[in-house]
Image (tube, rainbow, N blue to C red; front, side, top):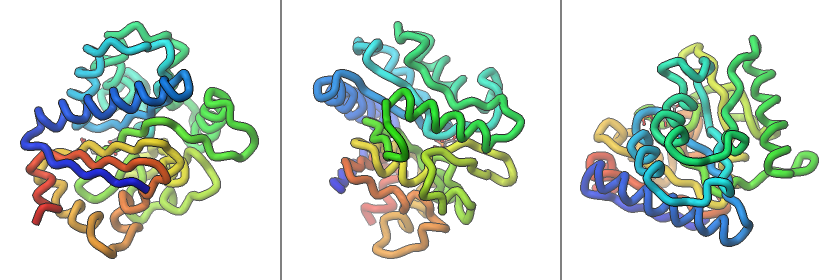
Length: 240
Ligand code: 6PG
């Protein structure tokens, strides 16, 4: 694993740097393999990054967009990660509709939706059998409790090793989420983290030892590049 840590002076600089890194990795993937697969994080931090990506002149027909996790709500629900990314970015660029791969949230049973998305991911990435697909870019955020994607502390999702997609659980609310093995198979994993409220979790995540069941972001140990991009408010946690 090649870990890169950068602390930017403020949120504006964090978003600008995140844009540079993400665009660079998208272009590298397309140069190497003719296309880029990118999985998006949700929550509030990445919204300005998505708005900035909407201003870029990229070969959208060669980019396939997935989600690393999703709240189990319709796309038009205010909590939908899909809805946020479409409004902030995807509705503003000429990306073919078939290149956008939202997590399905209509099935009564989220476990069925997880299986369906896993099959779809394998099909789009043309991965045979039980092989682990390597997405090019996976964007991640960090909760103040140390969760990432929808891998919440002390939940069953943290232990899932034999699936790509599983059902997360936030205070009893179902989520769909990438599993740790799928995240760790990516070529470039990019955390974008802002705010002093993330410091306590970051201290544990960057500590030599801590319990990954309590701080699930510790499970993210990709074979490829691991980028941690912070604003100063969050980054103080590791600068001492
Ligand atoms: C989600 C996200 C989640 C998020 C963190 C941080 O669906 O909420 O994928 O993992 O990245 O909770 O959220 P903020 O960026 O809003 O702090």
